[in-house]
Image (cartoon, rainbow, N blue to C red; front, side, top):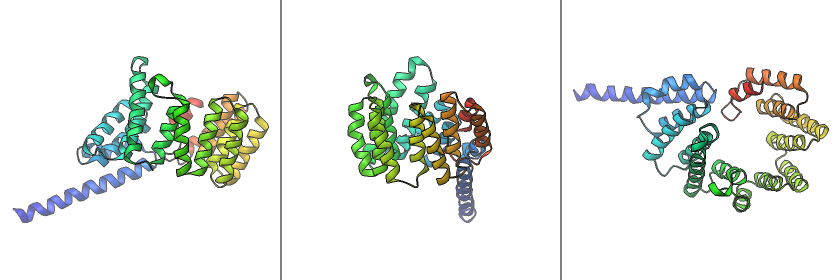
Length: 276
């Protein structure tokens, strides 16, 4: 009996690994529903499966379901910074999209999980950046505040000089110190000249200030760095729509975006469809 049982166990474990790997591949191609179909039968296997299920639900806009799976993963592996970070993201999304009666509680839980992620791993730059954005945007009665953002900006600068300049720009922008903000946006771009996101940040800032000619030049500079980058198409279209200008160009960009090969790092197609 044992000689028959051991090969069956090995085959079963191999199937789990293959299923997870294929599900991860589908997730990275933004085929979230297909990824879920492979993962759901494996949901009790280990925390990694639970987290990937949660990520799929998160990307599909189901904050409640994603929160439940991230909570299960954290319970099984309470020392994993990445898992707490995703749980914080899920609570943050739930706060944005859920009931006004629960928004404050969920926002506070988002902050608590971001802080826990950084406590476990101070070098988790994505968690640091998300907590920074929370501090900048959230009111003080749920744990936000510019004073906290200023302190965290120093930590960000130690991890990444260009990101530190971006953080300073966001603080100055929030304080309506627009000249100082622009200076930091431009310095971030100088420190990371090959990162298209830095040029997009400046272009978006200039568009919000009504400096459309300069913004358009910055978007063109970004296009030279990364031609046909999906996030550039989306950012440019969103800037046009926000300013109520170049609407036909925005429509064309969004249609091109929806047809592009996206990754989980790009805005979800659902957001592009809303803009369209």
